[in-house]
Length: 304
Image (cartoon, rainbow, N blue to C red):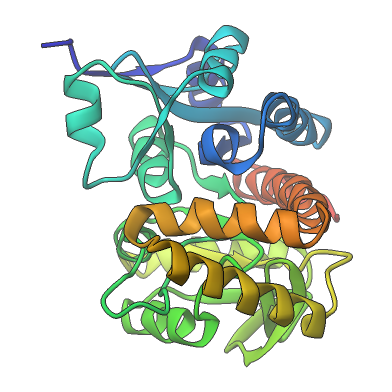
């Protein structure tokens, strides 16, 4: 059996121990989000977006059975070019035990980031409630148990956004709108779902995150950041309907549903959903860096 361990890269340890601004990044966007070679280019662009905002990126993934916080260039290339699995908390141990490679979902990235001492995670869209009965992402429960801030652009477009928001509330996860009163709609700029709170600057978000911790509430804080330029809702609805029909006809379900549907949307939209996805990922990475700065000891948030 392969040895199982958590490895934290030296640059991540240095930033953490110095009280610096540290941003965790998930890696399923590299292993399952985009085709090669665009996936590797995106991984580097996200790390650059964090660095350009003055923070330290820590991309997380599983390499040869080791959960790595702070993948290096060779490890990123390995995950981007290989036949990597997708690691969620329910299959992480099995992947590590067999010495496998995997991209980490939001749920698994949260777990590793918390172990490494990070405070902020940036992603694209979170997992949530699917249309199929009882099909819910492990991201929701992980958000309720891990006291990190997660910057996203709402639930992925293929999900039931209303049910996802209700489940987040049931799990005690505060969802804060960044410069918006409504939940972000991933590919669509916003949904019509109102949020209970908003904040217009990274410092204000940091104050909410600190208060969440001071109250010893167990959940993280989900930050909903609408993409600057999204897709028209009516166009997105039409593509989604066709993608779901195709998935049902092909018998796709369970963990295969998300990558299938996202791929179908990319094809139906002529790549427009991919372009919006890349845009929102970079914007979320920049905002996460600004929040990390505000949370760092003596830190001052940077407006983005």
